[in-house]
Image 1 (cartoon, rainbow, N blue to C red):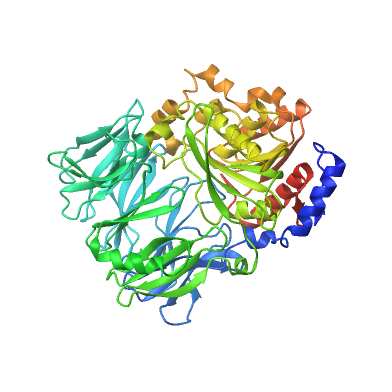
Image 2: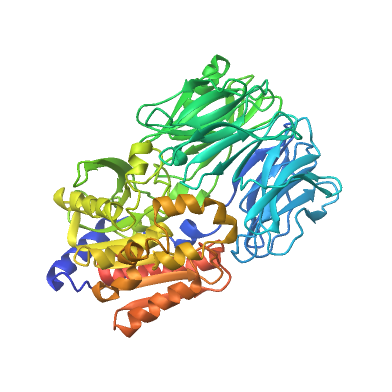
Length: 635
């Protein structure tokens, strides 16, 4: 452990703060505990309820493991040796595990099927430079799935029926309409699809059967696009479940009649968009709706599960989610997320209404002191109410005049949430207050809030971040001379803009995969994102029509304003933020005599999947922060 001096405070003040913090903070949590592979995570139960799968390391790489329920016959069934498997599911036939994987972060996802009897692994989408994603799985068709593949043209995905026994691909739908969303009915037929309009709205089309012509059922204007869309067919297939903000501010759970177009609201919240749903695995009814305010709130729609939800809430503290269930609907897998501990997983028996503890994702976190995350709120300079979270170092009481890191989420149409966050806990353990702000454009707060971000990259969205910092200073939480900005993707862009547009607010910045030039970024979007260009042009700007405007919001053209040190990290294979564009920015900084540290990972894309790279980067980042903020770090 070392304490680095901070140039922006006096040496005597720093010495007092460093000694005081070191005396009160709990022991350093090793980076390996926070950013290494989880012990076990993401359990899924087989459709027949007899086996449990989960992700865990095998020879240092995350793979899928399977065990018989009630036994200890755990065995690894996949053979990834590089990036680790992060997403998988059970085939409806109980015989196979399906998972996806790309190559070195290129986002060309292939789908693989593991035969649990023979241990054979088959690439279901064996095409070069092609991206595949699962569209539908249906209990009545256990040996088939529908998959979207862009093998005909990189810009558009066609729908294929995949035979899981043979691997045979059969073209189900050639995408001649620029569809970006597809919905299959319960007979595994694509009968609903959505596309973006030239103005950035969304149009929902349906057809009566696979040979019928498409017709428009409903549409949403650009103001509703990010809060609306189809979910799935109703049990009788005569309607669709939707999330829609048409006529309201927040995204509501609704049904729409396929014949009349009449809509009916099933669940809504005046302050939050629909965040998730619980769907019966066999009869396709919607049983509960989730809304994420400061925390997750569930609204039960089906009386038959009210007692189950009541029993689950009593299992332990935290926000819960039903992450899987068998087809008989007897066993539910439930996760609990807390702000100061690992994620806990349980198997819940609906017959007895009792839960069996399975495991936590990181056992070592059970034996360390973690920080509490508190919801906060403030008014932006234009009076818009902004929400967020504040985490302060455990053991530091009172939490005043602390070095602080403004941690900016990506998206930008995502959001920060309450619960365990390894970056937050890492920073708090090193002695920093951590401020997370759901600036305008963050999802979940209704369309008025998200639409307030239109053409505001680097503008009012950035103002919200600075206003949050000023809130923390006004409330004596943050030392105004020791504030860093840190972000990934859009958060990386906000980091660069923060140092360029508010050079007196931040001591330093850490950028992971953030675009420095919006014109280059938009022009270089991967081909499979081309169908969403109308949305990007409407929300961010057109790279030709709005070139001057986008330049005014691009850090590349503000290098002269950047006066504080920067740490920039880049994946060499990033398909979204190109390495060449980042290097152009780094060279411009160096040429102008700016302080910049650049680190590149040759086997990564838009983010760091490999634990070796995560651990290397966070080692560099915490030394960088210690040098400029005065916190501590692990050697």
